[in-house]
Image: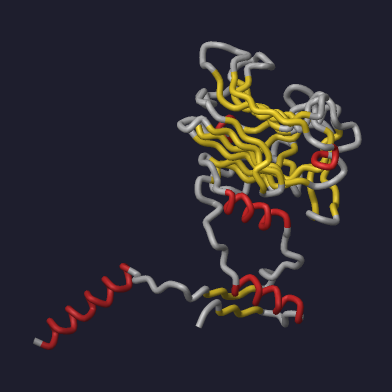
Length: 294
């Protein structure tokens, strides 16, 4: 027996089939291992200080502060997503969003606006107040239609970073959704860019460390990004191609219905564990009874 569910309502045939699909196909890998940040970017909320925020659904719960007039729009493919106007919109993240480790993966869905290509950064993290003191920087694309991925720098020098770049077709970054993944391994010196789950560009000999940073922005940095964005993930490790494709599948196909509404009970029935407190209590009771009978 597996995946017992009990509801306080009658499910529709469509919902029954969705439950069957989800419970019958468990994820083949743990895509939450090493997850530093996950912003669905499908909702903007107001905190107690009346500031606009986006939620982080990873264990770190690192909220992002929304600046400018970024809005949440409905999208036929990904549902709700954030839209940057390319003028003054961006999200400011805590510096903890960028892992201080030898590995990093950054992935997201992006759908560029009509003003692209133009001077912009979709993600920008710097080590000081200098705009070009990059630790991590992604131009998607720059005004020359090239995708730039900067990651790692010489600690004592600004404007001294590892970079890979490649010219892109407009169809890759404009007027349609594309899934971008950027990885770096400081130890091996490898930097990779994946487009829609397939390796698109790579570089070697990129061993500069991912230093501490002072500021992180999404949607801005060296210019403002114009377009829609969804499901930003940042990991403290390099994801495998299989994991990248799993993230793309999970984040690119939101469930068509809420199958948790009215759920009273859901037992996966895939594990039996021993409750130490109950076991200890029962043992004590048995000993007391035995003592009384003597």
